[in-house]
Image 1 (tube, rainbow, N blue to C red):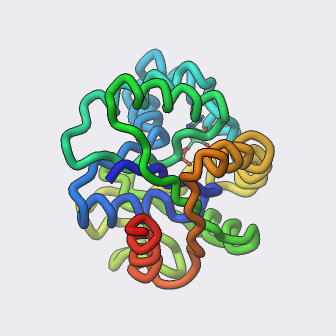
Image 2 (image 1 turned 90 degrees about the horizontal axis):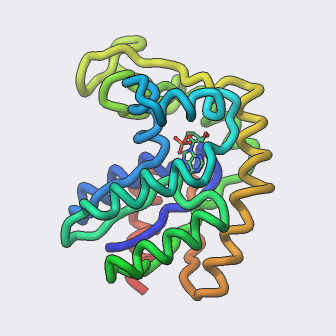
Length: 213
Ligand code: AMP
């Protein structure tokens, strides 16, 4: 499978990518995770990206394109699930060029549809494991022990960009800079819309149905 999981922040791209990876063996490529790792390791990229991320703004195209290209080069035969990339039309164009070079064209762009009210509730309650990145939610997916990851035992954190001002900014940035990418893929006939509300497994099945057509 070679797909982009598209959608606003909080639409469940990371959660669904994890499930699809398990079901298909495709590589999960998240530019957000790669950037958070760079920030934690205080690399040159991390230091450059941190202030953009904390404000909920996009990291410059040149930085994220380089990350995505490097990850795509090392994917195996089971394909890839891109999560959170591309987020601008310039990134989508660069992705096309990179995939042409690798002879691995995109098969589908799955747009996860969720309304704004639900997104704000999901993002403000979201907690993530500081070590393995497993996502939680204070109401809908609480860990067995408060603030402790069920999977690896590390502490959960409330991301700075999941706090109210940054959430508002991220949704605004999505509408102005990222949503236009949908038109780019619609014109290529790659766009598949999926209602991304309800049970996590039900949504995963809807995605699999949409990409099987
Ligand atoms: P995410 O975990 O995908 O929501 O990404 C967290 C943050 O990382 C975003 O709010 C951006 O600041 C940055 N980021 C991740 N992916 C990209 C991208 N494709 N283009 C620009 N910035 C990105």
